[in-house]
Image (tube, rainbow, N blue to C red; front, side):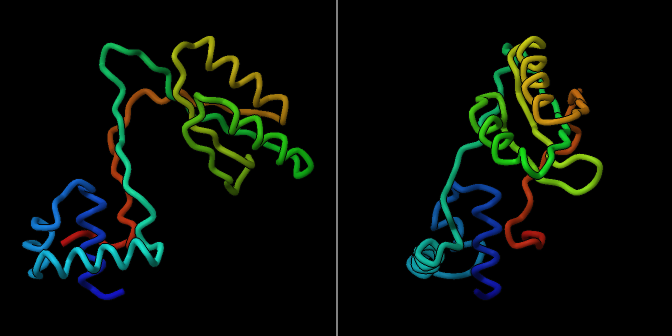
Length: 148
């Protein structure tokens, strides 16, 4: 993968709907050349897919929170199965530090958050932080470098 591939990936990471023609203009290549590079990166598994990130409608209230859980090694499989089964779980991170996992959730109500906390407590001690706002919300560049 060369510098042009990285630049193409950076542009797609910013806007996956950007047309091949627009990308070609940004990287000073022809549209067929860009299309060929994108197709190659898809075949090689560098590009694993395209997605849509949905924002919650303003009228719908959600409670976003981080639940930190200390899970004993013997209970990890059961904990992860339970987390996978919960629709309100948006992400689960295996982390270092005083807890084993941090579970990011988006709940419809405080009662559903309480249910999730109780469910996590079956696996071990928890600590929960409710997310009040998100002053910075940027997606990391998949190549680890700024887009030019």
